[in-house]
Length: 605
Image (tube, rainbow, N blue to C red; front, side, top):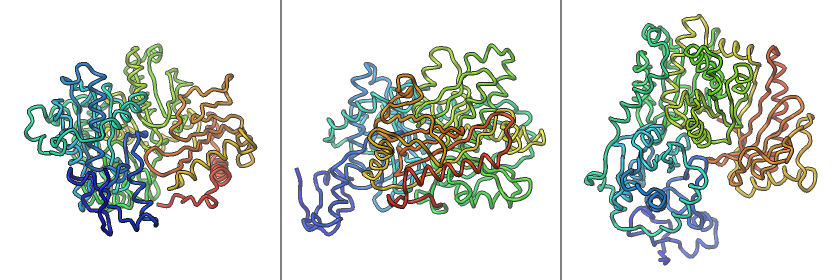
């Protein structure tokens, strides 16, 4: 039923209370201008599960995050879980939230989490709702620890302040994957009408006996288990290296402080302007530490003032970690995700071998990485004898693979994705900035005691396993049809069904297209990785050893590109490798994406 309201602008409370859910507020004059198209776009499509669940701007409309769409999503999730788990009514659901919010609308992660809980409680489903904001990894950790059927984390991670999200975890602690994501979406579409007025009552979480607060138990268990990643506590206690930490206005401050103390360190020095929650992210141009030095300015200034050698930055929901180190001469070295993964992979292997000197023990040891990430772990595996596997982009693939490997008695000691997402050990099947921060601190302290910097050790690793020079960036495209046109052109570059044969003057020897399932390197021309039709991803292997990938982001309007030159051990002509890589990267973007012709916005932070 549509109720027309003649107003100049949509009501501010549209889709935020039961009284207005049938009101579209569309003046007739809007139907002939762009405002109508913009507003109708909000109403004529629904969100779908991407690599990180539901994520969209907060606001009115079915394609936005708001009270109604969160209630609908929870009803669909609840309905599906009740059919899937016979014991759902006893297992319940874990619900957590970050610090995001819109002051003008009153929409916040906390409110949306309470509404999520209210929907479940209205159907007599137990809810483990955290009483305050927590890092994203705490939700999947709690799901496993409490034996819950699923978990929901209300967060948009490092996205712009306008966004929020609804991240769902399965009973194994990993992010939901197929077929559950599709079945939940179908179930949501069958449960669009709010079940009762109770679904809108966030106060229900304060009165229902079925609501529990897992914060104290989960935090205590997490910190206890974190000690399994601490290998040199006595050295940590005497560490003279100083650390600065920024939580980027998010959830990380208290949790990283406690993790450091668990490892025997003094707490890191917090960046005062960024340690407290601020949904406006007022001191940063974008709340994503992956952007590097340009968004770490306050952290680096404080580190200079305090004579600290290492800067750590967790993103707003503390599942990612950025690291910078003071250089010997001047300035700072900000490590890429791939570089930090090389260090963490080496560190976890080094300590594993110390505890397991028998080479045969490596047969059941794994490291994992997403396919767009550096191949450095593969180089480790060739020499050290453990096993390495690639997954599709997105930590949900890594989390589910960790679960599968553990069932057969295997141990995953390190996993990562290049976008500064790391997991040391298998404490939780999700990237974890809190545990990674403590592990990096211990690694830096150990190396400092050996008169080595992180950067020096990185070059030692490359000398042993081969230099891996990589480049990761993106262009912004806000028009979905343009993205489809770009990738359609690549797939028909030299005629129908014919991919490009050259890039930057270098012959392309193999092409893998996981969107269509094509892989020219396989005898049957079929990709070993699962087909992923919901996103675009094509990988080119060049004759000179460069591997280049183009893919669309699952959470932002971006086309990302990844290039890496994997040199053999002993080839230390880094400047030549970097020069060749830059040439190929420029050609990849200019020849295949055509930014100017397609009105793409190049990265500029």
